[in-house]
Image 1 (cartoon, rainbow, N blue to C red):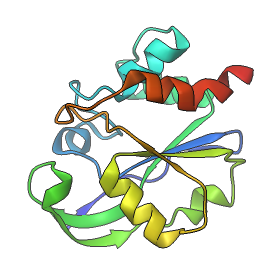
Image 2 (cartoon, helix red, strand yellow; image 1 turned 120 degrees about the vertical axis):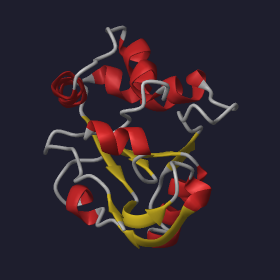
Image 3 (cartoon, rainbow, N blue to C red; image 1 turned 90 degrees about the vertical axis):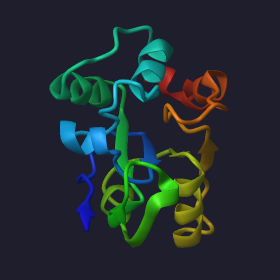
Length: 155
């Protein structure tokens, strides 16, 4: 069984972005979206017109300043490689740890696997399915991400 990361958030977080489970490269790097080919931090940096953070500390600083919380819907699982389709025997993450502590206004699900699991756990909770930022996703859509993040410009 592989273990995922603890949630990254603070009481000022306003958006919760949930993935499925960290990729091999992310687990090796020790933080979310550690694969340099993943478009996640490039997307956020472009939206906020900032340089893409390259270290874990720079990523954490960026996320805190922008009031973004990160977590995955799966806390541990069996997985071969990094593909969501290879996830099995998984345990759901305790998202209440974030939802009960931060003032989350919007929940974005990074990909269909994360969305499906979240909706099974929280069928009545509003959330938005986002196009995965994975390098394996040919249907990535920057505009959809920018539209979903626009409310953060108020802060």
